[in-house]
Image (cartoon, rainbow, N blue to C red; front, side, top):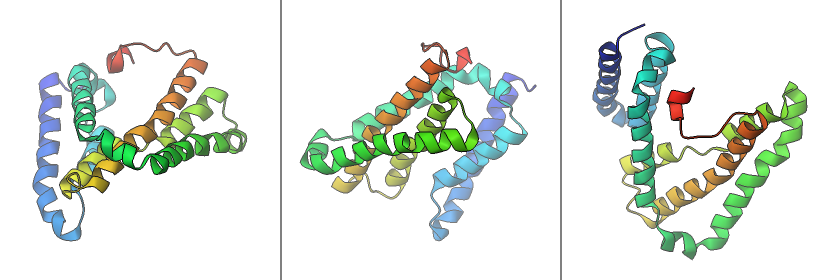
Amino acid sequence: MPTLLTTLLVLLTGVLMARVSAGRLVAWAVPAIVLELAVGFLLGNTVLPFEAIRPLSGITELGVLTLFFQVGLEVRGDVLSSRRNAVLRTVALSFLAPLLAYLPLSQAFGLARSETMLCLAVLSATGTGVTLRVLALGKGLQTPSGRLLVGVSVLDDLPAIALLSVAMASAGVPMGGAGLAGL
């Protein structure tokens, strides 16, 4: 297993490669986040196993908190309230669609209740961080529709979080503040 310093250097090299290469992909309208995800996927499946990243769990959790803070700064309550009906319909669909898929998914794959709920939570999560990054890269966060999209994306994740909580509780997994360090 690589040392902590080696792990950090590999991660920084991966980020640098993605950032340098992203400028060349602008002509093809490929957002930088696509390349960052691809580099992360390749590093995570070849060079850096999860055990090598585990000592960095505090840093990764800080990154997630920073992302959520940034999302919170971009969400505008006045924009959401001005289109309340559309927002409520979207959130209702986000909540109901996974529930309608519960029985077919459970029976088709022979999954236990907690496994089915986990699959549904993953399928219903919107990727708010990705939405924020892509809109920021395209200068879409300065528009009312861009801010509305981020707000709806945040609200759309609430049913996914509820499903994830139910899945974890039904599997008997304690919910606490251990984060990645508790895995």
